Length: 169
Image (cartoon, rainbow, N blue to C red; front, side):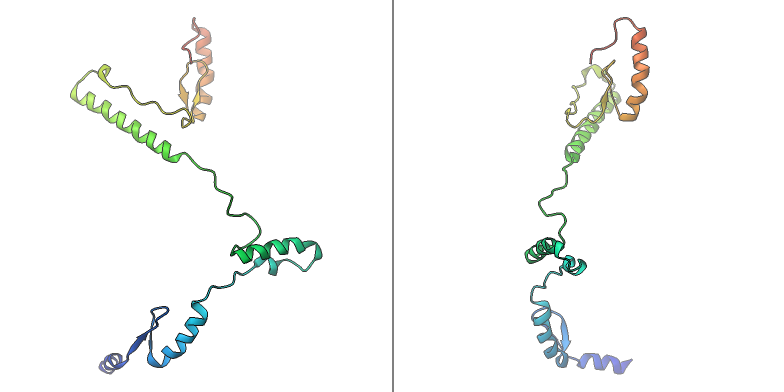
């Protein structure tokens, strides 16, 4: 073990100026020439379409399109970068949820202090474009899809029995 430690101390490592890896002096000279050739130049894009398609004349246009995209640095002939995924409203929904949670904390605070709930400030309404719930046509309340499927027939029956027809939406 002592001999191995002495041998390690005597080995001098030289860092490569291109990739910052360290090598023994003997290996450093060989590495520098390879490092410049292999790692410092941009690699050619592999055109999978060219290798996959047969040499049929009817596929010449497809091959040309694939070659054009390979020259641009893109792979394949399918979707382009112009297609954007549909945007979601998660940020606005998250902000609305946080606002509702703050309103609930105010209610708890009022209850804890023993103050009447009639003094509560009005809660902020969720914007209509963010509200994905279904509104009941009979009572105007809003429900999730499954809950609305259960509620609406029941509410319709109750409103038919009651005189006056129910609350306006």
